[in-house]
Length: 569
Image (cartoon, rainbow, N blue to C red):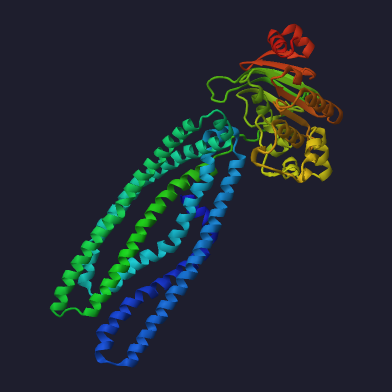
């Protein structure tokens, strides 16, 4: 929370000071009204001078207009500061999320990052706006009201002030209790967002398998957890308002009783008592606003800590200084590479191979064998636990991230299409020419179905390509990977929805137009990799074979079994 107040608000300190001054003047105008009214009742009306009554009436009107004008101006300035500050926080948070390593993203979880970017930034925005509007006005009304009442009747003021320490103590105590509750609540909201995200993304599967009731039960369970934690935090904070009302009303009763005795004994006046009761109402409302602010501040502190936890996360994929391997003549090399996601059980162990420029590597194995892990390590989404991965003799840890990633064209397993045109999905903001986009779509064997659609390349794609078939989506994704003519092409299970004829035509296009591109094809079908220059056979993270299709048919039993089961070889 400290960084939000010090770092992000710093550019707006000048504007906030001006806003505070305007708000201060407007609030003072509000405080003047009861005092003027008391003066008129006790001093002006008894002498019966109408001109002076009209004069002081005009003073009250001027004070009212100034209070309204100044408060509106200050509120608008406060809203602008809150808006701009939250925009900066949201920008930095989004930028940091985009640069988190995969390991860090896995640690925070995607639903949690979404929640921090939405709910938590909203809570901070609410706090910044409310504190500037009420955080200045309410304390001024309380302190100013007490000071003005001292000029009216010090004895009654002391009666009122006597209940203040109790109110402050209750507010501070409850606020300290509530902050951990709101932190726990936000963690449950993360789980809630994750469940909704999964259910919405998989709604067709849920309906197809008649699992609607099952998902409703899961939803009800997490929803009840969120409701219970929200209720617990709300009940805790709900103590503040009734307690405040109780003690302030006790103070009001004491003021009325003591005031009646003082008026009856002639040491006070009716106008002062009336003004005092008005000030008491002002102080009561101000204290209520302060209690509401504590609720908002409690939420914002929990949210700000969650936001800064991400923003302040240190970069873990640090650029390292590594000497170029002098004897290196391979374009891509894995040398004794091992890696584990959970750092307990290895996902791949002792992987070693090398590729020359323009060669094609096929990676085949059962689900969970570690095929996709090889691609993620090569692109440096993770760093290996052991071993070295190099491109053109340079350790990937020594290549700047942007420069490294620009070498690749990639189609991930279960990849994403965005709500954009077909051309927009292929371009993806990379500034490609229209001809490059058309060529890529043609290479990916998607031209025929794209041009058949109503608007062709400008045809709209729904979120995650919901209006396309599986094969159509894969071909658009392949076109995206090919469009920038990458040095290295990674196709991770990218032809599983393609028929054998289209798959063969795609391989032919790659051979004709991307002969200089080093290609890594990750697949479970032998037909997708059998024409590769080299094939790796993986089983439980271990290399069980390396060679051409013919070599593996002779030397690798696992590969023969896969080929026999799929192609009858």
